[in-house]
Length: 373
Image 1 (spheres, rainbow, N blue to C red):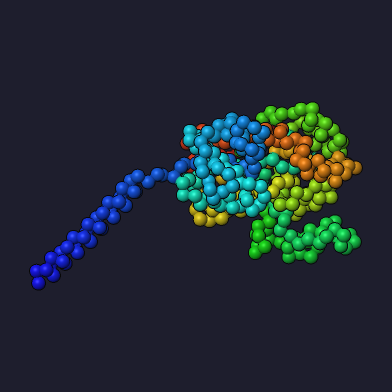
Image 2: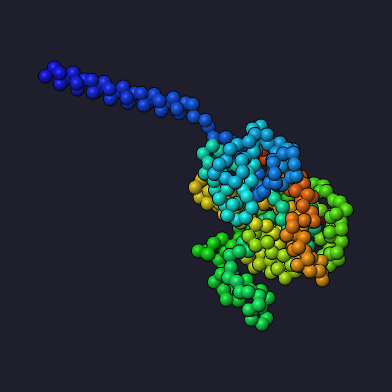
């Protein structure tokens, strides 16, 4: 009888001890848990060549060396280590090239519990091609629309019916650019992402006066475009839309298709400026993260600087242009890398350094002054 009570008492004492011990451990862990890093701006780049510093620059290097982003943060679930500036709370990611890399990398970052991204601004600052009808190499374009160039049916050009301008057909239609335009969002995917126009206009107004580098190499590259006045301009900042495709397309016919494809999916409100690979996936990942309350997709910006033209001069050969492009010999590579930083960094600094102004609400452009009578 006494032994039984003694054993029951011992069991109760042990259970209480374990419970209190576990509670104490949990409390200690909670007290020492590291709060997520506040991130005010995420700079999204798509590739780097070699090291992050001290060699030939990819899209990340200028941010690391000149912003600067001195801290390196391991990112094993992604493509490349992250870079961070603890003073301004600016984080930079290299997604890797192409749609799959971009979507996976942005999703991996968005779900990483080490970072508080709920109020972060996002700016993709990368290089791409530019339509000579709207801009010159070395220029930089802020996008209002990002259109997917891959979601489509396709018939080989050698099999096209007479009179067809392209073999790329919208889903749910049987003719090129068939009317009415299908829904932009369907079970086939998202054909066009429309960004926060007020935020884009604000970023453009902030950077429209940025002086972009011009040199003899750029002047030679644009000299042949007598039929395209915009292509012959010195580099400048503009607003223009991006077509995203994993295929690196090139040539006059493809450029005409791309111009029509952007206009078609934006119901005439968009205009092709730049071509790139990752932008749709970046925005798709943000849209899904926003559904989970991880980010605010209305705080996303898309900036592309032009390293090359999407078509040769009138009468020129697309194959000859491709031969130079395929070897990475973009006519404006260095200048585009520089332009992406020169145009992107003032926006990042303004947002990060005046967080009290922009944390609660996204900036908007300056209202137009009333016209006198």
